[in-house]
Amino acid sequence: MNNSTKNYINIVFGVIFLILVIVTVVTSNIKDTEGPVIKYDKKAITYKKGDDEKILIDGVTATDVKDKDVTDTIIIDSIIPSNDGKKAIVVYAAKDKSNNITKVQRVVSYKGSDKDSDEDTILDGKPVIKLKQEKVTISKGSSFQPLNYVEKIVDDKDEDLSRSISIDGYYDVNTSGVYQLYYYVVDSDKNISDSKLLVLTVE
Picture 1 (cartoon, rainbow, N blue to C red):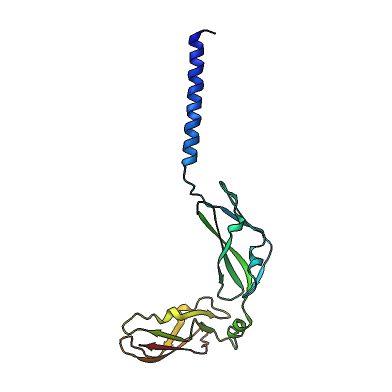
Picture 2: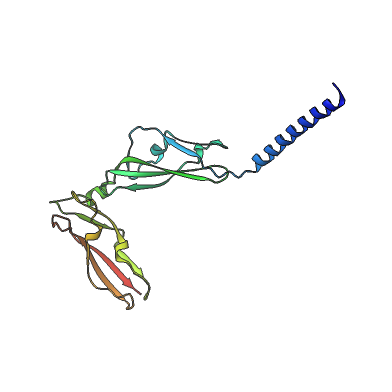
């Protein structure tokens, strides 16, 4: 093997080595922007409000391309009951070491608390309207959106009665005082719910 051949081989190996070094450096500096993948088994789950949320996490895993198993980062971001109270959307969240967060949703069977069940019972076909709270205090001149205080409406036929909400009562956000607002809803069969009282105090 003459010197020119040896020099050629050395140059080739040198170029290959340099390419490998560049690839390694570039790869190590690429920012991780991909979140983990969350998976869960298909077994049926019934969750009752107030129960230990661990039953919702059993069988749920999270893996990341870079960090591998990140199951221990899984949390339940939220539990959102459906309007009929029979199902709920469970939102899971997990993150990797680069703080990339992934969220997925899962539908489970749902049961409210005994108190919720009593309040949501439909009698004689009448819809049920429920408020988030019974009393509200605001400063004079501030904004007040009465529909924001409706938590949910339950009906045996109509799924969405949000546009059928009526509010009886008068209030003036620019005048101090105590105002009584009565909320009720009418379904497509003209059944009228029992009214719910919201006491608004303007200070």
